[in-house]
Length: 86
Image 1 (cartoon, helix red, strand yellow):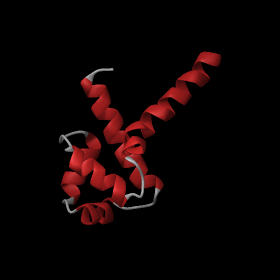
Image 2 (cartoon, one colour):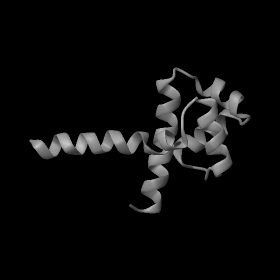
Image 3 (cartoon, helix red, strand yellow):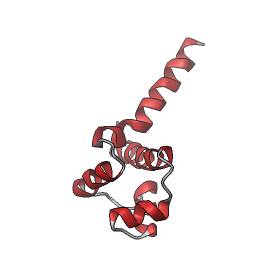
């Protein structure tokens, strides 16, 4: 997996975890102590996220760093397995 793919997985998982919990971008940004633009940039992969921010996000979302990182990858793996069975 390339570095870009890893970043995409993290960013996608980050956004999906927030949305799964019904938290708006505005509320999440406020809870994480960043601007909406910065949080949006994290979710799009436009900014690198420091591990401290990832840990804080996991705490805020009442989640784990593992879930934030693997959320997208798990869905993608399930999709691939379904396609492979056809």
